[in-house]
Length: 253
Length: 264
Image 1 (tube, rainbow over the protein chains, first blue to last red):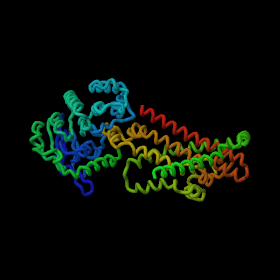
Image 2 (image 1 turned 90 degrees about the vertical axis):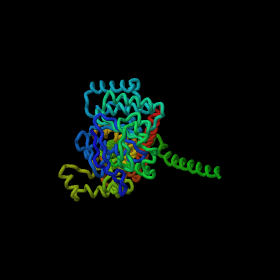
Image 3 (image 1 turned 180 degrees about the vertical axis):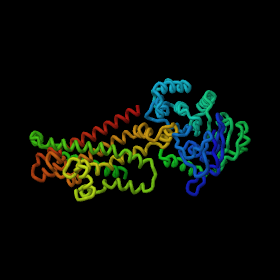
Image 4 (image 1 turned 45 degrees about the horizontal axis):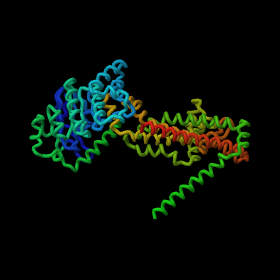
């Protein structure tokens, strides 16, 4: 379903992603595991079309989507800090993608109602994001992503800012959503627990390359006693994070 | 040491506030008899009408033209962006008389642009359209600056989220960027309008001062004061100052209310 073919990305002289190749099968819940600042977010931006790679191809469903605009890709992204629209209610946030595609009013009402029920958000339909808790915001973000009817859902460390109790609840909710609607998922994290609990296959991102893949139960051994921070040179982290933020601005969105 | 420093700061603040109050007080304390006479003889009303008509039209045009420009400057990176920004900002730093002369040369019948405009039946010299052009020229940068700041303040992840939710750039602009920049647009509109309302130099150069046709409040204040008609000049100044004052207070109250509503 998703195939990244020899992706390279450089910012000036700095090569952030180096001949990266990766394949995720249709309906699979894959994990991209790597240290903070290893380029995971950048890779998701490339997949979502928010950033153009310096070299290589992005194939989705067998089609070359490297130069296709984000709104024309069958891909959506759940952001680390939700990125909910602050001026819209929960209902309007979830309905956004449907309305952007000019869906009929009845269809919007029905689909959003269904997704709010699925994520337990019915009583917050008219609330704005600023009155919701972190967990509720993330549930809105999940529902909003599912409403886009994208075949591929990318997750950029969506649970990283939540406490352990909320995290466990949302992880099981996410697994349930995936069972009910088996979308293709690529979930980025540097947390072993999340990777093991959610993934069907784990890919390790080290030094700008996917160096190996393993089953979630093998992840601990795969990491081989090293901490996640060891998977990448720490001094690169801040630079890559800054470049990642800049890339969102650079793509003019 | 701290006490002395605080005393200096407070004294300077009080002195400045007093200076502004005394200077403007002369305008607001214009004799009621003088004001009512000037207003009742009917010579000030056409001036107010011309000023309000032209400045509101200039501010609306600034909104229409300035919003996409502010969006491009806030969200896009392109070759020569710094030069474009400087150019668009130039009217703020330019003396209004120079701006007026530049516009006069641009639209005069002797210039190629003026000839094209004349052929199209557009006459800008000594007309209200000329006033709008001059006001727009000097006030547009204020609008662009305010809206650009508002758009820049929107986190990049918000429009990026719209894009990955299949919204086109145009849909995102109208349904995400504009609603989130509303306060910047309102304050930009008001700043632009008050600047246009108070514009004198460029307006006088392009449109002159034809009573009832191209005579705006600032131009009227100047021409009437220099011809010795202080009653009429005072009334015009009173009207201009009142409009500015009410606008400023209204804007502050509106933003305060919006901020309280958000906090609630």
